[in-house]
Image (cartoon, rainbow, N blue to C red; front, top):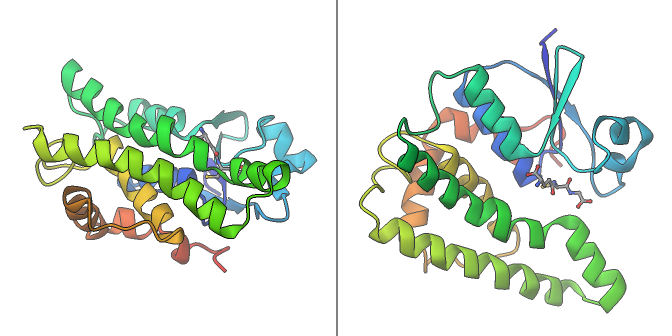
Length: 216
Ligand SMILES: N[C@@H](CCC(=O)N[C@@H](CS)C(=O)NCC(=O)O)C(=O)O
């Protein structure tokens, strides 16, 4: 039995992020699924693990539970430093976190299931309105991300140099998410080039929703 248990959901992009990091680090883990649509993540069992009622949560040695995908990934980087998913220098680290947080702080949170459910229940948003909402914030974030990646000299095969980092992990998961809402990819050639480079790596591929045990 693995000492790491990932409580997650196949389609959740924050879960995709953590699965990629675990794969890149070559770590085995037990996959524990929670279906979000019937609210399994609001069950008493899961709320004990994460009172926020959000996946993913990483259980370590049956004793400690980590929540928040970025914190989990930073823990994995500290606990299992090789191969590293952060640049060695302070400025490089800040740049990677800054790129990652465009997605992690400014795109994903406003497009989450609970937000889409809220605008539907409180403001009557239908499928088209929810798509428009999602697209609005995804495009704003991706336009800025594209501008930065296309113009900053640190961008190479991946977001920062020639090895995948936290920024690529977030980029990859969000591109998959955008596809579900049919967000156009043409305006983002640099993002899509990096997505393709990530997609060639088994650690990224294996984390995709369709390859998980709970995929529908
Ligand atoms: N900031 C959190 C966000 C976690 C999160 O929003 N997870 C989503 C799935 S991607 C979720 O559990 N949504 C359930 C809901 O909105 O009810 C993280 O990075 O882990």
